[in-house]
Every structure is written in structure tokens, then in C-alpha cells.
Image (tube, rainbow, N blue to C red):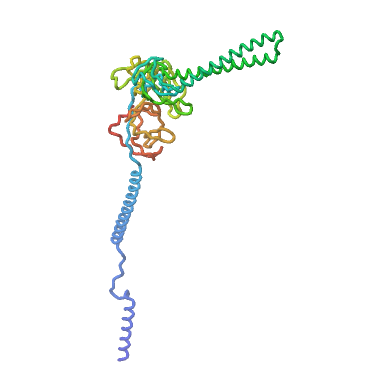
Length: 415
């Protein structure tokens, strides 16, 4: 009985151990559960939210970077102020500055040595041609002249003796009373004495002329503009020393005005064309002149044509050296525009202005006419509807992108 009971207990223990090793075999235990669909949906929602958050963060950062690059590029483009050319009135005449000059202007020097004895006219005096201006006392020249005349008298006496001797020997030769050789010697002596007399006469004439230069006469009719000597001044007219200017004279009945005409208007500078002069000291008055000649060549450095305008000045109202404005009539109308002076660019290749085309700067070569100070006249190379950059940078190049800001005072572009 005891053995059977122990065997049964052992069997029960073995069963319990076996059940403890395999819980699924326990009686009444439920079966293992699998994840439900709700959990899967929650996980998918969480993953989607995380994906959206990450995508939005990356997209925002990318957009910010692109915006920063765009803004940087925009800031790198310079902003320029532009103005528009103003159409100028068709030019009927050209006004150019000039200075009046005396028709004849010359210094007067002494031609002989001595001391100034007296002078007769001072500055501002109007004199006629040939009128005596001053006298020079020439004691040395006078002594030389007296000696030369004495030498001439001696030579003439020797010549007379030689002539009578030659004539006598020629007469004796006809009767063979003297030899041919002796006769030729007497005739040769006569010819030599005659040449000596001629030389002496020339020397006397030279000294007489030098003595005559002691009186200084006006070479032409005009006005005395300077007197540089006074009584007692030593006058030295030596060939090796610079001459001493006694007076300065100017003929002002007709005045010259030299004007540099721009090449563009050179066709208006024809000889015979009329030209009017105006001066500030004569407001409202016009002095009429004429263009008498031009240089017939354009100056390569200034691209201008030098012309001479003569104006009659019978009353002497116009003074030499005065600043005048010369008005030259143009044969045809020349259309032009004006732009501010601060739009000009002086480049090595020539004068340029910067204009804006398709939001880019373009360098345009131009030719200017008259300069008004704050503005200049442009006669070619620029249209009235061009947007011209004001105060362009020296480093500005053609093709550079620019932002345009219109100047408040600029004129509206013409259509």
C-alpha cells in the first residue's frame, strides 16, 4: 500500500514539473494575444506626424537659404539714379568766348645809341603815322659822322687828283710820250681812289641814317599803350644786347578776335560770314563784325577751328584785350539735348555716358556742343528717351546689372 501511494505521488510531481516547463499545456490558460489593428494605426499616425514635421523643417530651412541667396544677390546689384535728357531748342547761332586784339600791335625800339633827349606822347595818346614820338641825343654817332665826312672829303680830293693824272697820261699816250704800262697804272690808281670815295660815301650815309634814328617816329596811326623811357635814359641799340623798348603802339581802328569754333560748327565758319560781338560793359549793344579767314585745319588736340573775326572800331569804344562773346550764325538748325554735367564719364577711349537698357548699364559715346556749366549740350549719340545714370561710378562697366531709381527732378521720358 505504501509503495503504490509513493509511486502515485511521484507521478503527480513529475506531471507538475512538466506543466511548469510548458505553461501552455496548463489546463484553463488562455491562448497568446497578437497586436490589434488600433495599435498599428496609432503607430502609422505617429510616423506620419514625425515625417511631416521633419519635411517641414527641411523645407523651411531650404526656403530660408534660397531667400538669403536671392537677397544677397539683390543687394549686390547697385542702385542707380537716372534722369532723362531734355530736348534743346534748335540752335540758330553759336556763342563762343574770345578776346579782342589790336589789328597791329608792335613795340618800338631805338636803332641808335645815346640818351633820351625828350618824349612827346604818353600812354593813351592817339598819334598819326610819321608823327615824332621822341628824340635821342647821339653824341658818339655825331662824332663818327663828322669824322666820316672828313674822310670822304679827303678821298674825294685824292680822287680828283688821280682823275686829272689819269686823263693827262691818256693824252700823252696818244703821242707815244709815255708808255702803256705807266698809263695803265695811273688809270688803275684813279679807279682805286674812286672805289675809296664810294666806300666813304656809304659810310657817311650809314652814320647819317643812325643819326636820323635819333628821332623816333610813329610807324602807323594808333594809340600809345606803353611808355618805358624817360628823359636821360641810356639807349643802347647794340647788336649783342637786347633792345630797350621805348614805346608800345596799337592800331585799334579795327580789332581782331580769334575764336576756336568746335568741329561740329566749323561749317558756320566761312569767310565773309557775319559775326556779332557782345560785351558785359555794353549791355544791350551789339557790335557787328565779319569773319575774314580761318585756319583751314582742325586742331587735333582741341578739335576746333581757329577763325579770325574783324570788327570796325572807329570811335575806339572797344579796347584791345577785352573779353567778348562772339555770335556766329549757323547755316542750318542743329537739334540737340542737354544733360547734367555730373552724368559725364571721361574714359581713355573718349567721352561717355552710362544709360540703362534692359536693367543693365550701357556705355554710350557722345559728342558735346556748348557747355552751360551745370548742364552740357549733346549733339550726337543720345536720344531724349534714354535713362541716363547720374553720378556713375568710375568702375561701372557695360553690361553691369543695376536697379533704377528715377531722379525726382528728371524730365519725363518722351515717347
